[in-house]
Length: 147
Length: 72
Image 1 (tube, helix red, strand yellow):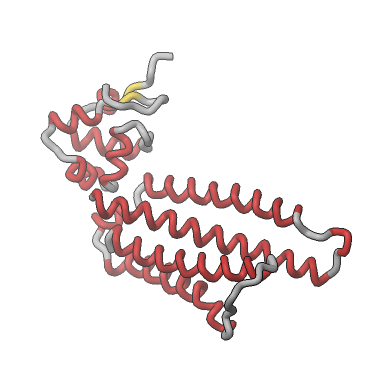
Image 2 (spheres, each protein chain N blue to C red; image 1 turned 60 degrees about the vertical axis):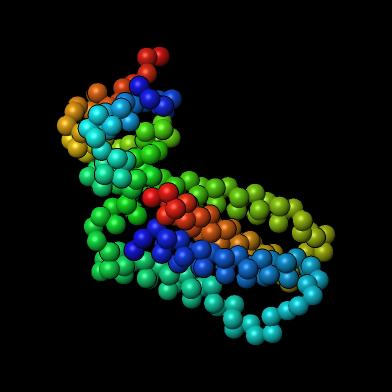
């Protein structure tokens, strides 16, 4: 495993997730998109990619990489980068949920609207997770170029 | 002292160059990424105790000559 390979795995997972989450969020917020996904089974693709990607990274850590590569890929500075991004994720999600709460039609509240709001929050969190994956991946790309 | 973190002055770049090592060589010896070594040298990152000791061991010096607390 190298920084560039990890960039590829995480970037593909993140970018696909950003695409699907953005699509879902725009649909749920009522934006009139000019096109629609006809086969909703493909909404599973980002989840499957993350599952396979994390599996590959774990397998690679224990069976494919040498100790020197693992030391570089998973050192304390990378851990700090991960924690900082996770913190940013919590903050952005918190603000996003606040905004989503604020824009609901509380005067005509119904179970349908409540259900829709839960989907909006889930789609937003999904989008932020995808953005953070891409963000982390770009750090790996920079390192692969500099290293 | 080179570029330093506000809470920790470091002399890493000078001592590394004196030892004739590149950032890559030092990072391999200390078992971290080159980026970590670069971040420490530029005062972006404060290393853990274990990492500071590994760097000192590689450069054959004391941790105190690598890192110092700023006065006030």
